[in-house]
Length: 113
Image (cartoon, rainbow, N blue to C red; front, top):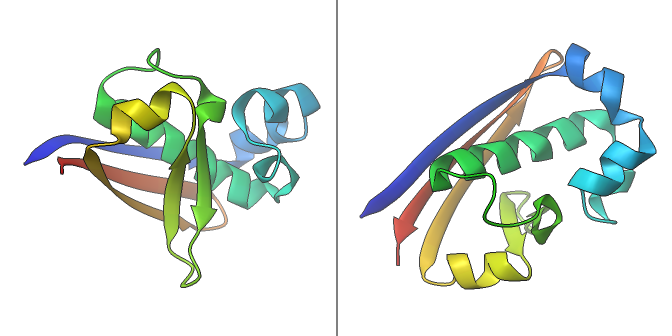
């Protein structure tokens, strides 16, 4: 059963104005992610926003409790930490991400396990 669906799009022109800010990167991204290029960061930001929309709340866990990594095949997936682990342990998460020079977009579907 589908529990939630979220989608988010990030305007790269707007995102570029804040992406180089060290404090912004530290607040919203893991240590590993914070070293990525701006296009990859924008995509990962869209992933988190889409996940929060699918859940229905931004306040359940910290942004840094969610990390986006790529599998060996290149597909994106979430890694959860702290309170996010417990929240998502019995759920299946589908994640898709795409970029073009102007935008990054992500779609998240949460299903019961």
